[in-house]
Length: 75
Figure (spheres, rainbow, N blue to C red):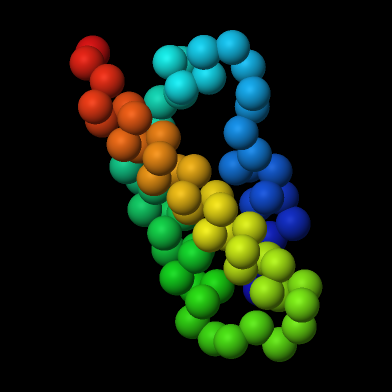
């Protein structure tokens, strides 16, 4: 159900001026939303699955936040 590498793909890097150089396209946001929807489609059977769903939510939230920041930044 959960991909092991998924969590590492969405960890923020805390480098200087992180949001200034971050860009994200709509396709990655749509993919994050789809994986989160898949995760919440059925109730979790264990604490590990629940934790994975929480991680997918956090990753989807990060993608949304980056998309908003990118969308409002003038090019």
